[in-house]
Length: 16
Image: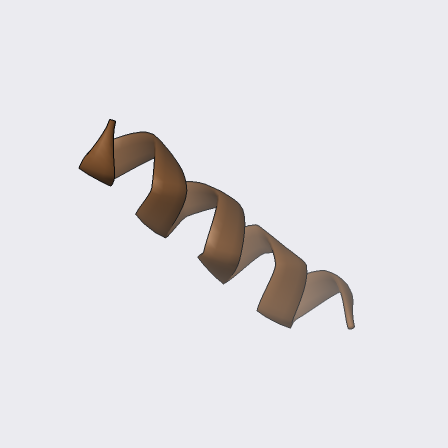
């Protein structure tokens, strides 16, 4: 749960 959320947030920041 937390791990996935962190990964998704990180990916979003990189994609932005």
